[in-house]
Image (cartoon, one colour):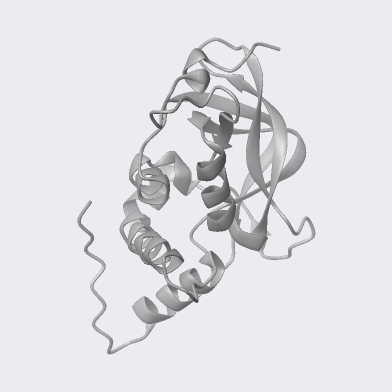
Length: 190
């Protein structure tokens, strides 16, 4: 098993993060740099990667995916490196109770080297709402703008004394944009 790319040990916060630097395999909305920037206020280095023996599912009523272990399947995504302890904690809050942070072995697409990374696995392995295969390109075309607006709302809410969870923020946001007669604007300046 190869050590994480050198970027994982690079200083990213002016103090240096050699110890406490994390690698995180992302496979859904976090593959989009704008979403990552909104959540952790920067875009760490990344490399394309594969997660073997997992499958990326659609979730009924949601616009983001879930992964679960499935033999002989694989999930294409990317590994972001040099994630600080504080950033990992923010990602944990963003992923909320629906996901469990899990250490997995991934392979880098460009070099086939393997490495350990954290990823977020769907907490309910028996969820009847999981189906098919989630498509990143379709998500970018159809849902990214709204998801980004929801993410901005979640991050703004985290700074409030009584912040909502990401799941509550998502549900409230989706209700607003789906109710006829409302005039919700989802334009977001980045």
